[in-house]
Length: 282
Image 1 (tube, rainbow, N blue to C red):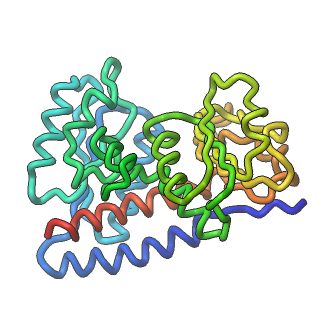
Image 2: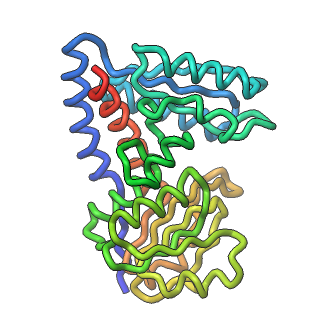
């Protein structure tokens, strides 16, 4: 079987073109849309991602400010800064970059981000709005999975979808987005007993655990669609996904590449959220 590569480049380009035009229209009315990236780590992957967000924002006409609180920032300091930025009328969107300092959990601080500026949908309020089907920003990575499937003509309504991963960043919000598309969804995770028994019946398998090569050909049925959200670093310093692509290729009907699949769409959607936030308040 030929396995189609679900590349994110074209969808990201389309989203970015729309975002750039809308950003220019906002800027023409006074000031450029503004995103505040709050950072409290020196993780190499995080540093790389922040730079990529800075470049993306610059290309699209979005002002992006890095607010570096340092690796020793406390939960109280992070919450205070998020509260300050939430009250700042010149800030349209706020993103809290992970990982956080040791001893600080996302749940400890994310509630300080007002939902109207929570462009990556990490706060309990944003997640609650999503679960209730009310307006708000979903986590961009979860949204990217759904948008990428739609873009490539993969039906979701009535399909069996297994999401491997239960984080508040991807797995749980993705469940809500897939239910909104009328998919029938199963959530599995790294501790699921006999994982293949849960994944092989699925029409679509989404891997979002953060464990390299967790999903192999033995975990999918012939003709399944496999969406790989994982970003892991291998022994050679290369980025690899949660799916063992060589074994899945030829058995899956379609597979997202890593990198180049979900990632570009995630960034594009995050930037679109900044524009939406700016449009709703100006």
